[in-house]
Length: 135
Image (cartoon, rainbow, N blue to C red; front, side, top):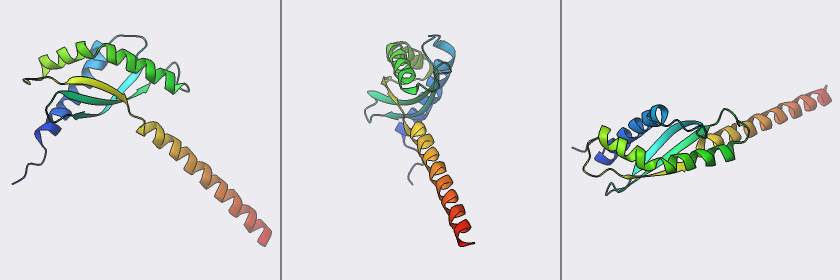
């Protein structure tokens, strides 16, 4: 009988949960925006954990690129501290090295949603004008 989740999936889920709490409670850098840990992917040998995050910087909501780069630098510089804290919280023989990546899926979804809204508005205005010309 196959397991529902592999060990790597369980480790990744636990790292994601603990890391989100650590970032929220322990990191007090003012350059760090509101960070959401979207997913964690752990290598098969548990040597690396790729952490995918999104960042909402309340100061620069419209300037998302610079805010996310600054927040990623803060996270990368705190990776050693976060790894040691994870080692205390999660009992693993080897704690993976953390590699942080910006997850653009949320911003891409927002951009696509805006494009769809724009296209629907254009279609509805075109259908309204064609209805007027038929009458």
